[in-house]
Image 1 (cartoon, rainbow, N blue to C red):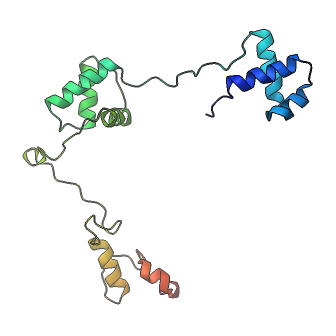
Image 2 (cartoon, one colour):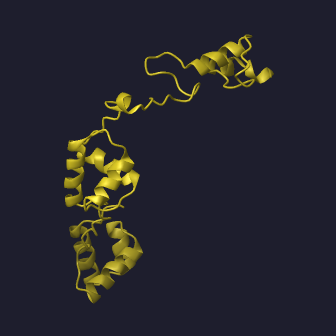
Image 3 (tube, rainbow, N blue to C red):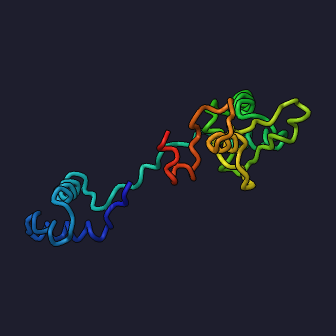
Length: 180
């Protein structure tokens, strides 16, 4: 939302209007809209208000300070829980019932980190791998799915990959994919 006009500008517009200038002249002189002049004049007459109202404050947070304290305790106790586990424990501990995205935002805002892999081996949880062929790896190497697609487009046949998927960037630039 844009900021309100300054109180000084509003006061000068109202003084010029009180001096007998027409609203059209006042609006042109101070660079505000004609409806703004009419609105400010009406507010000054009806409410006696010669400045903007304060900001309404926005939406209340999903978790109040007491709930944040409970959440800090839960994370300090054991920080490898899932968001659903934190939601259930927070509600059981007297905190509000919130959604997973809200809980995730609160954890980020408070700087609380969840260590999901520390106890993963003892719990028998296997790390989830990304989709093959979607994105290059973080170390600069490309995924196996992408390498299979390039090999298939270069003449090597890979039955697990559909024909023409994905089209490598070098093939798109050269126009090799357009001949299909």
